[in-house]
Amino acid sequence: MSIHPARLKIGLIGCGKVAAEHHLPSLKRLDRADVAALADIQPDRLERLAKEYAIAATYPTAEELLRDPDIEAVGILTHTPSHHQLGLAALRAGKHVFLEKPLALSRRECDELLEAGQAFRRKTMVCFNLRWHRLVLQAKEMLDSGRLGTVVAIRSVYTHFRDGNDAPDWHRKLCKGGGVTFNESVHHLDLWRHLLKQEIEEVFAFHAPSAKYEDETSIINARLSGGTLATAVNTFRTSPSSEIEIFGSRGRLVLSLYRFDGLRFYGHAEYPGSLSVRLREISRSLRQLSGIVPTARRGGGFGETFYHAWDHFLDAVRSGGEPQPSFADGRQAVLASLAAIESFRSNRPVAVDKENALPCR
Image (cartoon, rainbow, N blue to C red; front, side, top):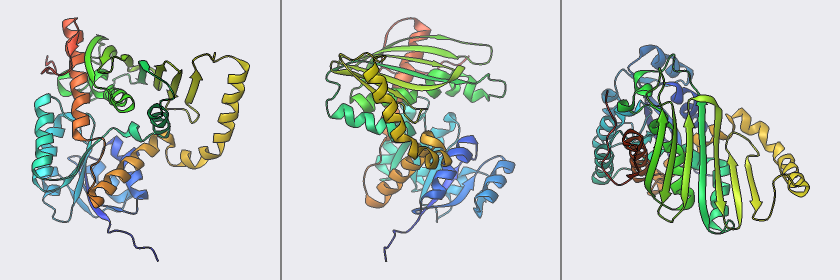
């Protein structure tokens, strides 16, 4: 008979959309996790999720949950302006911390979270869930193997349609961590670093505000530490897309993360419309069809990323390993986003390692 390790008692702070649609369904499937408590300042959604997932302990504030001695780790799933305060409070309470992205609002806040995690010797992880996407994992293997040769450029597209009619202030205003450049682009900025093993050194960005969002659409151009050039398109005003294209001396790799067959590689001499390439892609798509149904029932490839992120975090807590992405990774994505915002405000290139602040109007 196999012996399973004790279930880690987890408390979730924040019962909004991301908790209901992604985190709780993922944790329910993990036999090493026991979501023992929830906290939220809105009684209706706290009661609804507690009832749906049969969670007995509920708290109207994060502070009360953090005083629960049975809770070993917390997931902080609240809006970005609260991450710094809640993260520090959780670490001081002796809890391991799984924190939604972006890590915090400033370099100072990120640094304090990093220092607290080290001082209190707790496991900390930021939820860049796209690192756990099946296609990203495959792309990482291909890049690490050298199949693309020397990478010269990377291109990202990360878009949604959000008209802003019911968006809260924290999602619309730059000073509260809202807008497409700060709240959204951090996902792909992290993937640039993760896939290429290079740091983002300098950015030059442009943006367009709207009546609803102070930062609705942006273009980020960047130079990475290995000499790779990068560009990202981000907007709230079109259909959903999450794509990355990597250009190497031996070929081109395309990831479309909302497609089950969204990984395509083209050798340096191949044209995508040629008959041999089209037949290869059709054959590959057909081979992958069998895996669609079970994955779709669990929220598709995107939904699975949260399951694997939590599974990795639980393993690190129990084994003593270091969870990835770390708070240090979260810090670097925040610094790149802040530099992009400073760039489109000043209309000049901005170094990523400088101290930049979100504008408040």
